[in-house]
Image 1 (cartoon, rainbow, N blue to C red):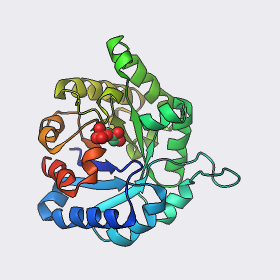
Image 2: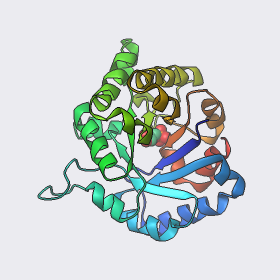
Image 3: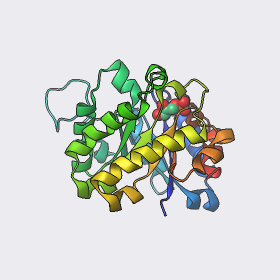
Image 4: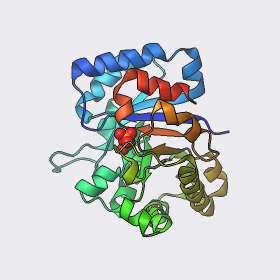
Length: 251
Ligand code: 13P
């Protein structure tokens, strides 16, 4: 039985005061029941990792980054190394969010290298895949997400697959209020798991595949009730403690 996992992706939002209010609200609301039902984490802008470490250590909420460099260290201005995320006790790091793919031209091959760098540092990479509206309408959803995933499967050793989290985030559902129907999401998740099975059947059964794209307390329950949807990667709703908790309690 896979445990549910709910991760908040703050994107480029927050400040010290607002973060503190949000984190304390989430921690306070995660009573024994909420904490027992799902694993929970926030992926925050790198400058706030220290704040997360200070305010979340010892709580049921883990934390992590939103991106990382493929390089270990050196002359790469503006980049954040896996070891730096680890230095602040991060557990997760997003790899290949669609906003990185779109605005920073990240290829699936680069994303795969980032996932490898994360694994090598002991972090859990959350590898994000998803099609645009154009691609869905052209009927290429499966080939697009298959290609995005395959690049990672080509380089990650089969035995390491158990240490990976996948996120299916249809680009047309991100920040638009247009959530994928539970069936559309389930179909994509099932498809992704079948690809994982080809690489390592035993590991595939245990890999958490999160849905992301306008997930809210009102639609979380139905989405997460699908057999291959193991949680959520939450954008907008992760910025309000009540909404984020509402999603966790929907598990
Ligand atoms: P929204 O929940 O705001 O649609 O964002 C989803 C997302 O991109 C999470 O990574």
